[in-house]
Image (cartoon, rainbow, N blue to C red; front, side, top):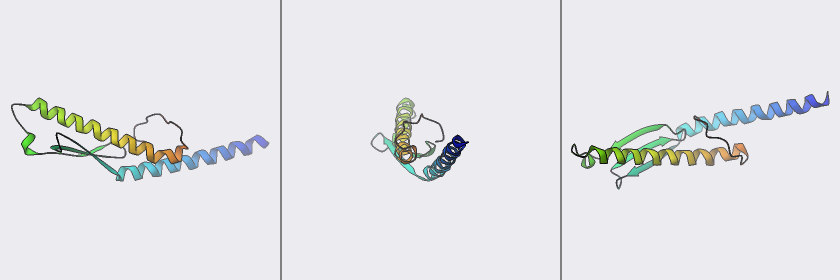
Length: 108
């Protein structure tokens, strides 16, 4: 019967970690990172859950004859914002995970 005490302790610790992860995920939804491309002509803001929450494009970069350049700038800014959000998540979750290298799980 002694083993059940250890299992209960493990389950309590796992539940505590799960609660902390959920709380941190909610906190990350409120944190924002910003990325730019084209010298700031395209700006993308993402939250800590890697959701893109805003994109702004300066009028000067909009050229109907060169949409490919604008597409490239938007893509670069979005990818940069997502990378920054991943790094923020890694930093924030590191405390809870105890330094474990957790897999990339969407929404965490």
